[in-house]
Each structure stands twice: as C-alpha cells, then as structure tokens.
Image (tube, rainbow, N blue to C red; front, side):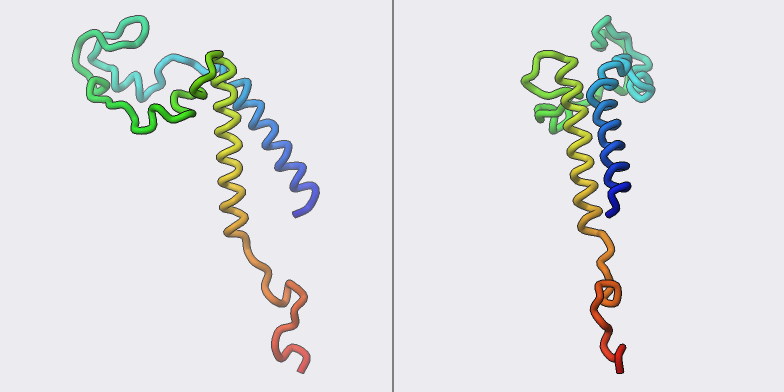
Length: 125
C-alpha cells in the first residue's frame, strides 16, 4: 500500500479513537427509541426500574455475556465511569479495526503470476 493510504488510515483511526474515548462520555443516558417503546404501558421510578403496569420490558432477560469485561458500555473493575466508558470505546474500536484488517488481509486479492513478474508458460515461445 502507498504511504498516503497508510496516513489516511492512521488519521481515520486516530479520529475514531478520540470520538470513542472522549465523545462517548457525552452520549445520552436516556432510553433510546427501542427501550422507550418496550416500556410503554409500565410505570418506572427515577432509576428506570419498573414499578407497575404491563409492558414488553417485563419479559426482558439478562444477556448471556452480562458479566463479560466490556459489558454495559464500560470496563469491569474500573470505578471511574468516564474512564471506564472511554477505555471501553477505545477497546471496541481497536478490536473492530483489528478484526476488519485481519479479514481484509486474508481476503485480499493475490497477484496473478504475470503481475508478480513470473512469465506465463508459453509466453516467450
């Protein structure tokens, strides 16, 4: 790859890391549209716990990976919520970039023998 492409990728990765590490702390803690829809018909307290009524959210179950290190938009074991959220975002970006790079590296187009400088059979005859 050319140097310009590597600079472009590095700059894009840097911007993404800054957004994930810093700006993610300013995301809204209010329920998104799906969460709000599942709560329709129920009453909740100030902490968002269901206190009455009937709604889809009452049938919700915990995810199988709820105890994983990156569950809940944070890193387990880090008490500072801003640092935990920021590092979780950075880890997510790096993991996603690494997996994407690995997949593209494996799937990249291999050079044909003529492009690699190897003469095709019968080319000089």
